[in-house]
Every structure is written in C-alpha cells, then in structure tokens.
Length: 257
Ligand code: HEM
Image 1 (tube, rainbow, N blue to C red):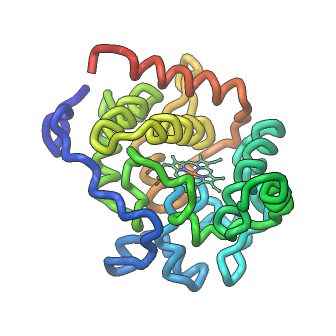
Image 2 (image 1 turned 180 degrees about the vertical axis):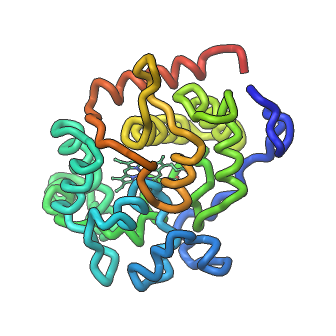
C-alpha cells in the first residue's frame, strides 16, 4: 500500500464521528455538504443528508422522481435499479427489503402478520428519512453521513493500493479499518454488501475481468453524484454480487493487514 499524503496508512485518522441516529439538521453551510446541489433540486435542505451514494446519484441523474415530501415510488425504485444494472432476482429481493425499511420509516412496521402485510403493501419510500432508517450502521466511511465530508472521502480514496484504482481488496481493507474504528457486526456485513454492490454497479473491468473504480469514478459518485465517465450499464445479480462479497470477507481474514 502506498504512503499517502495524509500520513501512514496504518495510522490514518478514523472517519469523523458519525451523527447520532436520527440527526437530520444540516450543521454546516449546505454547499459543502451537498456539492451536487440535491437540496436545491428537491427544494429541501434534508436532501443534503441522504446517506447513500447510489440514491444521490439516481436522484441527481433523474432516474427517479422524488415528490415534495421526499417519497419515491417502488416502481421508480425498480426502474432505477434496472437502469443501473441490477437484474431481476436481486432487484425484486432488494425491493422486498426496501419495503420493510419504508414501513419502519412510516411507523407501520408493527410486527406480526399485520406488520408484514403493511410492509408488503408499501408503495413508496421516503428518501429524506433514510438517515433515521434501520439501515444506518457502524463502520460506514462517513463520506455521506450528515452530508458530504471531503476529509472522509479522501480517507476512503487513500486505500487505493496503487494510488490510482480502488479494487475489491482496497474496499475490504477500508471496511476493516472503519469497523475497527467504529465496531459492530452490522458494519462489517452491511458495509461489505454496500461496497460490493457499489463496485459491481459503478465499476469498470480490468484486463482480467476484475472490477475496479478509479479515484475519479468514486469521487464522481460520492461527491458529484454522477455516473463515472463512459459508464456502461453492467449486469449485477446474486452470482457476481455474492462472489465479490465472499472475496471481501476472505480478504479481511488475511493476516497481512
Ligand atoms: C442498489 C444500489 C445501491 C448501492 C450501490 C448502494 C451503495 C451504498 C454505499 C457504498 C453505501 C456506504 C456509504 C459509506 O460507507 O459512506 C451506502 C449507504 C447507504 N445506503 Fe445504499 N446503495 C444502494 C441501494 C440502497 C437502497 C435501495 C437503500 C434503501 C432504500 C440504501 C440505503 C442506504 C443507507 C441508509 C446508507 C447509509 C448507511 C450508513 O451510513 O450507515 N441504499 N449505500
């Protein structure tokens, strides 16, 4: 791993403290929290705090319609997943999971059969409420927690082992360090799943067919909320996602860190 301008890779500063769950009021000027201007686009300052790079990108790239309250229909979500390459089985499974989150956010996840039925009937999710969702976990990069954070983006980019590309191993290493700094099993599981799908959707293929992101690609997605330049729609299903998740878990077991 290269020594980076911000110091020794083994003594990096941990990600800035994540906000407490449910904190939603921007604490800094919105411009720095929201370089892509999502809050102007949605006419709501809470848009600066959407914590997911995929959601920010599909909103900015007009792949979904967000109503004035922040709701996106499950149908729009389905189209956006399809447009970003997520294939049928994975897409429909993701939608079932999102319906459960949507029910939790709407206060309708009451448990039991009726709670389950409420979740299955959810036809929208409020993306402005995502910071309050049960998907918030330990060990995130902190790049989009409580708004965009340049320092945490740079910290994530510094895991590039060749100084140019971010590979699956680099992301596994980043997740490992993040979870060490902010422990919790959900940080490992959710964090690896998120980094795997990020790489599969937005990544390019190298000569050996392995996915990677350039530093610029990752910056475009997290900061500018745009697709990487010359992005081509991939095919992302259970098999390729599962392979990269397993690969990242294996990498973390290595004793070399
Ligand atoms: C399918 C495409 C998706 C991709 C590629 C993706 C990617 C990611 C990545 C890489 C992160 C981690 C950010 C970080 O550590 O800084 C993240 C965070 C998050 N994502 Fe997504 N995501 C996707 C879909 C979704 C969906 C459908 C939802 C929910 C409806 C969602 C909700 C979240 C939330 C709440 C976080 C914040 C987690 C935290 O900060 O603890 N994502 N996503």
